[in-house]
Amino acid sequence: MRSAPVAKALGALGRPVLQAIAALGRVALFAAAILGHILRPPFYLRELGTSLLQIGWYSLPVVGLTAIFTGGALALQIYAGGSRFNAESVVPSIVAIGMTRELGPVLGGLMVAARVASSIAAEIGTMKVTEQIDALVTLSTNPLKYLAVPRVVAATLSMPVLVATGDAIGIMGGWLVGITRLDFNSAAYLKNTVDFLEAWDVGSGLVKGAVFGFIVALMGCYHGMNSARGAQGVGAATKAAVVSASVLILAANYVLTEVFFTS
Amino acid sequence: MIELLDVHKRFGENRVLQGVNLSIASGTSMVIIGGSGTGKSVLLKCILGLVRPDQGTITLDGQDVTKGDRDAFLARFGMLFQGGALFDSLHVWENVAFRLLRGPKALAKPQAREVAIEKLRRVGLKPEVADLFPAELSGGMQKRVGLARAIAAEPEIIFFDEPTTGLDPIMAGVINELIREIVVEMGATAMTITHDMSSVRAIADTVAMLHGGVIRWTGPVGEMDATPDPYVQQFIHGRADGPIESVR
Image 1: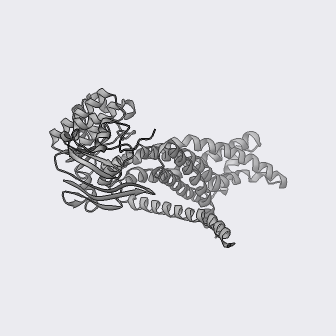
Image 2: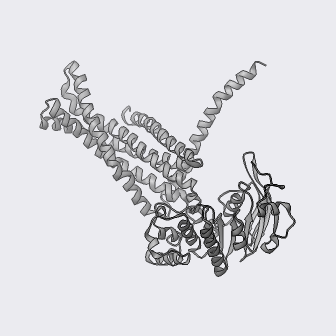
Image 3: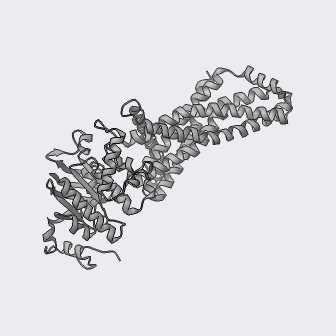
């Protein structure tokens, strides 16, 4: 008879694990379906153009602002930390490496997740609860192809551009703080940055950006398409999209860093 | 001819359809009546393939609707959704011409726009409306645009899901008249689901009542008032007392 509480406890433990695995499977199937549709016609170029504008262009201010303040703060931190062992001169190179390899793609990805995953999930979720997705089906249009594919392609293409822009602005933020607050010589700061920065520092960040863009749009579309009825359902889908995209970005960042820099 | 044979559908413990048998002859207008939550919309979505029935068969001209070319099947249908289901991000004319702008028989943009404006005119809307967005329209206008979209590609079969819900009685009357006129003019097969009795009398050739997951009664609209079926009588007269349980 003692086995009953144990079974109950194991059940309580196992249920969420099984649910998580099932959810992972559903997301993987959803991603596979999107990838399967990318190269098959029809292609919705107008929707792709609109998505590029919405996801790429309109995210520039938020990514730029995030980058400039992060670059500035990074320069101050490295200067303060480096001064403990007389290594203040590493500020330009560490700011550049930190921005391009890590902070540019990760913070850019998180900001875009907050801005884009939420708006995609809310838009598609609202379309679902107002029967617009059913209407698409009755008009012989595959909702996945019409709604999800352009957004995922647009996010995957535009995130590396956003990351590159963020990197440049972030480095500029560090430079600004360096020359105005830390008494660096402007030319020397820039020379130091250029000398120490390698192509792969930038390239790895751009690859990360593309992966993060894919994750952001995938999560927005997945949760929007699976939104429950009513305002509460759309709200929950929006929240789930942002949280899952953010967590997956951080997890993917660790995996990519392992792959890129530990071998 | 659309035929449903022993169609079942459940959502969890809720058995919505429990063996629906129904025939809709080509070129006729069938109205399905029934209380809220009796599965009218689910039935309609089963025919369109938006919901997969658990059991039973649905055929269109003898062909199982779940088999064969899905796009070709859907190209024969037009549908007016309860809330209009217009695409917010598209102009009114692009909503109406949505099907015309896509697919193997897609029209050029100017041609599709012309057809859309003609269909808008058919449902009583001025050409100026074409360049507005759905959010700029009133509920009645949105319903008309939805109707224009449903008929844009001149389908053989048109479904109307609660076409007058949320409209004032005058606008509801206008929509009912439009539906009747268009269905007769196009010679289309129409299936309407509603619990608005004025719609039933204006639109229907035949009426079917869905209750308890099955079709309780079906017959010509002219015989509806005279039928002794207590379910139909309670429903059409809106009585609280009778075999249909009402929640107070």
